[in-house]
Length: 75
Picture 1 (cartoon, rainbow, N blue to C red):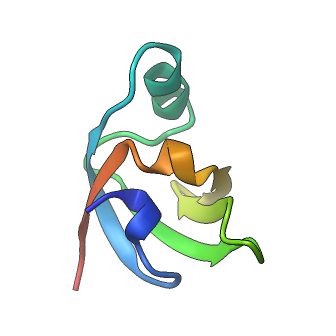
Picture 2: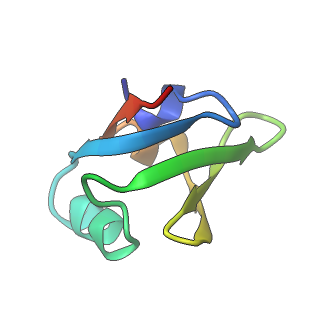
């Protein structure tokens, strides 16, 4: 599953960060790295962007960028 499909309030673990070049490096620099827990805290009224809770801070990502992050939903 990709991060853009994770429902609000659900927690997952990042399994892979895709993308090419600058996008991938920017995500990694922001702490979006494999084996990190992430929770979708809310979505904008039109659905884009989404707000994530990751590594003790809040991060907003566009859906297009979130599509390149693979996650595994935790129970």
